[in-house]
Length: 464
Image (cartoon, rainbow, N blue to C red; front, side):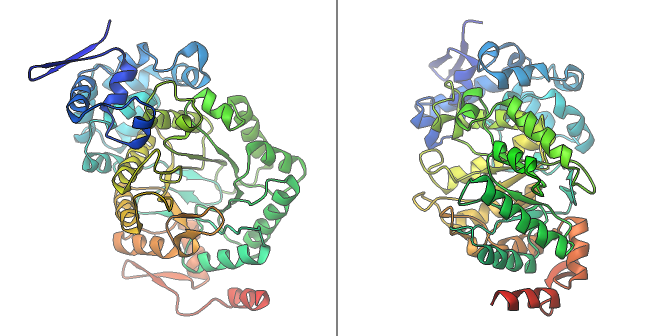
């Protein structure tokens, strides 16, 4: 094929490659404009979307957006593709696939069976011609369940990452935030700290502190220090009590290289984590963070639009059977997602694409202080993602991260979502909350306990 053609009225539109069709079919966002790959007008965007809708899904197996020979993520995507799983939809165009996804045949069992047969480019393509309600409707059909010390992602459940960051990694400050978060029922996805320092000795001390809290109160959850995978490997070698191996990832080999990683390094981290055997109900132990714009910010996008690059990161993630994956959707800044509308759309796209690919997806519902967004926008995205069946969100004191200096969701926001949508924590964690009289079910609604548990009261008195 020499190009992709589509006519709208008296205007004929020509796109030279599938990569160009994908980029120009994307809903408007500042990052694609910055990369000079976005549609030049609404008319061109509609023409590209209509052209994309007529494109066979098989085309994505024949025309790689980033060459197979030069990119290990492309090789992973193609080499791991399951043709048998793909066969039920292999005859469809992108537009037909959208209609199938919205139909009754696309139930949870069918979508789970299909996941190994879908490539990131296929799910990114169909997301580009879907409305917000379509992204929500399809995503809520399927649950991706993962397990380590508890079970995350079950229907009717929504977990949280308790994020007790401190600008100097002060133990007392971190511990106070952990206790505060637990009292609001936060922390069943993970108690995860972004460290102010990346020294291995400092990381080991934080790991020991987290493990001591989890073991002392017998909390059915997992701890994680969000440091580089190589530092986690070294911490394991030093005997530190490490539960989850963390790493930020992207959708191209060059972007991952900018993080100092490749697939072999991730495999080494995965195997090191498995050697610890610290899970009690499962062995999903990788934690990945992603975000639209990361490949572009590293000048490693190869002319591919930022949302498709993001979806390709999920192929990297699912290769390592993670416990948690989340898009830090508004963190990179307005250069990539300019305002609340773009952040909301991106968060729903990311969740939809990850779910179709079989990735246990969460979202850091957030924005930077120089973006054209506010907490009302985050409330909208929070509520929509809760409806769509998000696996987990962030829980941070006052929704303001004092170490990373951005705005996200608070302990109270998680409580709001659980109360308003009837969602519950991970089952093992919920039992612990009830035993500690922190939260209880009352007529199907999640309620705060009547008093501070004695163990936590004593801990707070010691810190005071």
